[in-house]
Image 1 (tube, helix red, strand yellow):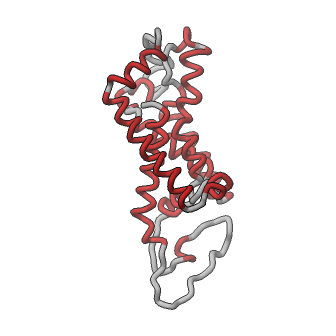
Image 2 (tube, helix red, strand yellow):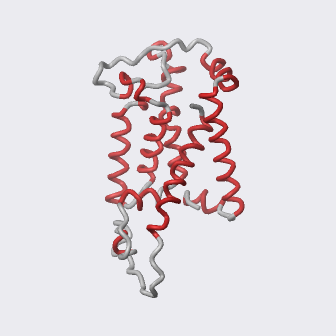
Image 3 (tube, helix red, strand yellow):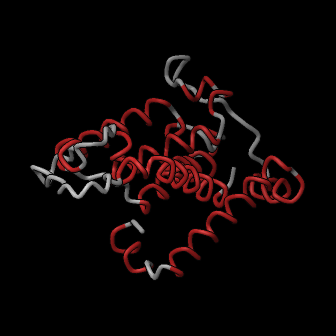
Length: 211
């Protein structure tokens, strides 16, 4: 999957999840006042909406900085592609190496939990979620030697990367497994940008990563 596919499908997945769980964050109109959160650093949904049970995961996802989510959706490729295909192509000869591993995901997720639990920051959690979706979209379970590195050895699978860039463009024009996700991702991104423009939320998104 290429850039637009990863960006758009990741964004669409999270926005769909937020839409499905949105009702859990709307208090009942009973005329009762909702309590204020006890601490700005530690978010407790039970303090804000006592009549609604919401999980920490739901609250965290709805507070995600979408800017970092989008960065996370490309993070494995941002790091691995230059390293494995260009700078150290003779060593790795593969664009899916360290950052396409479960170990990398665990490290980024652990960092995300730390900043969220201790500082109320979601930027690292957004990176980890974007990385997680990236590995799913890349179907990394089909490459267990990479996904579970270094359990099966410290060497990554070597591929034929001759004319890699040209081959990618050819697949973009001829392979449905490549161009369909790209088209879907493009449609979602266009919808998202249009929504920002329609709601006049461009500045809010640029500054806070939310709409």
